[in-house]
Image (tube, rainbow, N blue to C red; front, side, top):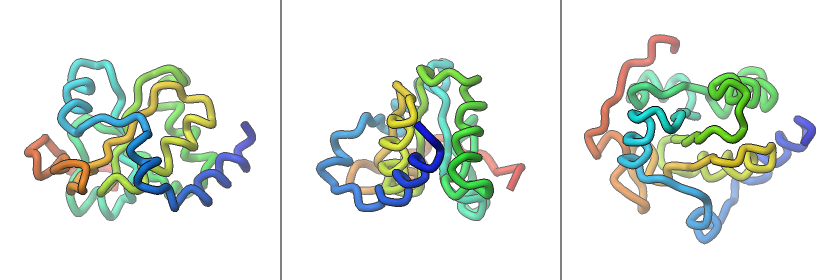
Length: 145
């Protein structure tokens, strides 16, 4: 899929209905943490650097902002680098409350990622769960922000 098509998917997928969001492959924050700790999953925080500075990032996660300074092409390049180019690697994406991840997952699926999950409760919680931070899951300061 050309990069311009991926950018279009991101641009126009902002209005994913809740029913569609429920249908996306998802993991709870606790399940994502357990898989990450066992080395079975790469956790990517897609929020912006100012958000990473405010709350910290999930311990051991990779920060790749959805609002990448190099646009969609830079975002894709960095996601591929995080999984050593393996589009079959298990990846979970997290944001503040699950809205942005519900936009990114379908776009990455269209790009060819086969095991991409979103964490619908996000870092702070949503109607889908308590959230990473309220659940007491570990966070670390963002050294790169």
